[in-house]
Length: 231
Figure 1 (tube, rainbow, N blue to C red):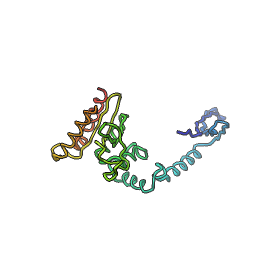
Figure 2 (cartoon, one colour):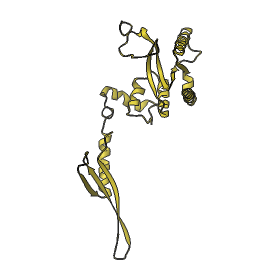
Figure 3 (cartoon, rainbow, N blue to C red):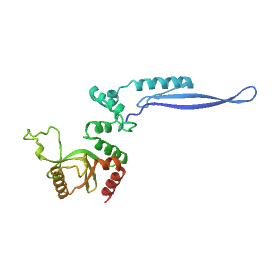
Figure 4 (cartoon, rainbow, N blue to C red):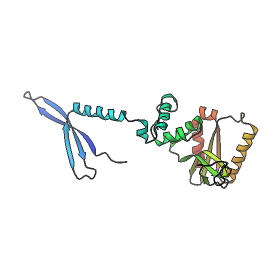
């Protein structure tokens, strides 16, 4: 991150009046440096002027649009602004206007994934989202895949892992399911079992959580994940 070559320092001076009473005079020194430190300039000012400068800076910053802050398209920025106004997960989120925000809103597939994503970000656990794996357990890109493309076909994809977490020799696949175990059809349940069995054969560990677990006991999920990656 580039250093802003401006610093501000408060300077207090003391003087006595004819009654020998000591008064404090506060001024501020603004120091400007060339980015190569080839020159320095000091500007002395009072609190009133400094407050005026702050107001001008705030005005400029507040006038910056979401598209400008995040360097994204106007269309995508409009969607983000709408989320910030109406989405409870976005309210007071510490990742607003960041790349994590883009991942949360445009990469993840459901509110459950977004909720777990936010909690995982807080832990500083290394993870990847929506990670494709092939039948050999190798990473595979999902970009441009379709069943009509012979050279880039979905049939080569074993699974798309909601959260792929790795630490040392531990390879953990975490899934958030929108249905409970009892709500899944037998076909869905069998598909998940087949995927889990293949992943385990390839050396992955698999954790699946229902929407109820994510919504009601997410702290336990984070504890589970921490325990698995420490083993």
